[in-house]
Length: 107
Ligand SMILES: [Zn+2]
Image 1 (cartoon, protein in one colour):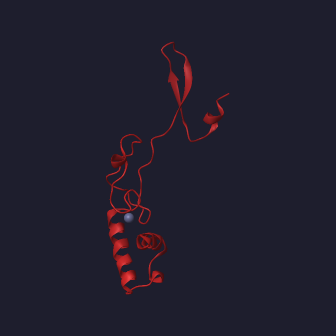
Image 2: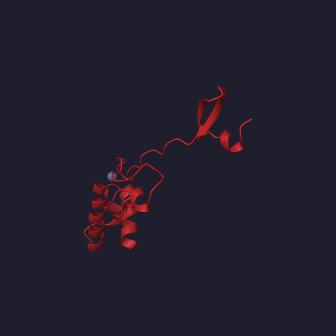
């Protein structure tokens, strides 16, 4: 019987033939999927899929880095300044962008 931690489907099962020709089952964590933008779902650039390396390798230092793509970040900043100036209200902004505009304005 496998260990309780290996009874989950989050591990890939790999059949491995050992040097003594025994067929054994190994468990591996699958590679993480590539990160996507929270608004437009586009794949994010400049972010390593590897879990290793320093913080700057795993994300970028831009505003909303690792969460939003560059285009959506620019759009959120633009909408935030319009709301602050009074040209737009929060009700004019879409649901997905609104939470990020609120985050931006709270800083
Ligand atoms: Zn985006």
